[in-house]
Amino acid sequence: MQTAVTKRGQTVIPAPIRKRYHIDTGVQLVWLDDGEIIRVVPVAGDPIESLRGRARGKKMVEHLLAERKKDLDLDYRQ
Image (cartoon, rainbow, N blue to C red; front, top):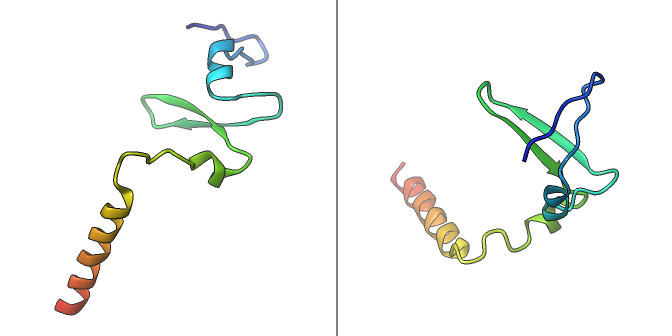
C-alpha cells in the first residue's frame, strides 16, 4: 500500500491497516525513527489489555521461572 503526503505533512492510513490495528478517530500514534526505518505504532488506551494474548503459546511462565532460577543461582554464588 502506498499513500502520498500533503503540503501540510498529512497522509492517509489505508483502511485495511486501520481496521486490522483498530486505529479509530482519536487514537494516538507514536513515530519511531531508528535512522533507517520509520515505524508508526498505535498507542493503546489500555496498554495492559492490549497485551492480552500476545505471548500465547510461548511458555512464558516456564521461561520466567527459569530466569528466576538463574537469578537465584547467581545470588547464591556471590
